[in-house]
Amino acid sequence: MRSFGKRRQDGLVKPVFASAWPDRSSRWTLREMAFMVWVRETGVIPAALSGMLAGMGVKHADIIASITFMAIMLTILLQASTTAWMARKLGLVLDTENGKQ
Image (cartoon, rainbow, N blue to C red):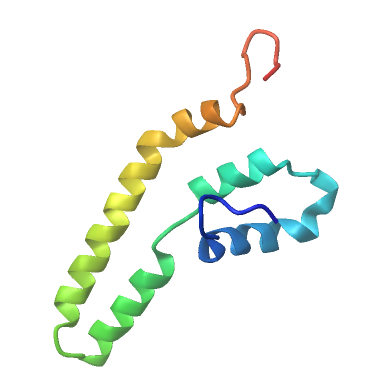
């Protein structure tokens, strides 16, 4: 597998590749997989864990939850504002008139 940048981003790449692997019949390209890595859902697990900490009454859980919320919001804003750019950069935008990339 090709690495993205100097060091491998295994925490980001493996879940997408692992979930797409059983669906080999759709023949995802590397560019399509890279796009899925970029637009994946983020923050579900950190939000659940911070909620669990708050529910358990852990000291400063409210601060942890606030920081987690801000990190999730910043990630969503960054990804949402750059999704079209990333699709164009990867050559995944379809020409609406003739249906070609």
